[in-house]
Amino acid sequence: LYTIANLGAVVLQLALGQLPAGIGFVLAQGALAGFAFTLWRLGGMPLYALGFFMLGGYRTGRSLAAALASDMVKGAQMGLAYGLVETVGGVGVILAPLLASWLYVRQPVSVYPVALLFIAVSILASLVFFLLGARFVLARQASKQPGNQWTGDQQLPSGNCLLPTCLLYTSPS
Image (tube, rainbow, N blue to C red):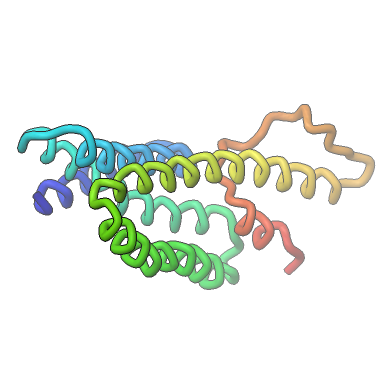
């Protein structure tokens, strides 16, 4: 099954890599939700194989998070942004097994709905950060131009903005 997960990672990276990084990131999170749902509610080897294929969304999401960071920071700040992305991703890798083992002891199947809840919160947070971060960047850019005021009516960028990395991108050198 992990061979299928690796195949899923390759296919998802090739497919979602063609989209804007923000959209691909949210879709990769959706694929990961599909993995959790498939293992929780569906049965049979073909469906488990499909679920493990969607597990490839994890690696795809990590790659797209790095792509989001690289698109939003100046070259000199790329190390800091990448470190921030990896630290946030690493916290989940450290805490998830602790929470999963605690849940498993209480009721083994509870791991999956809790995973779905965390993924849903992550998707919502991503969407909020993309929208708020894009508005922040536009407002900051407009305020730097003399006589120009941003009213919030202008078109937003493509949604490739996480708020912390937008702060790095727009900070003075």
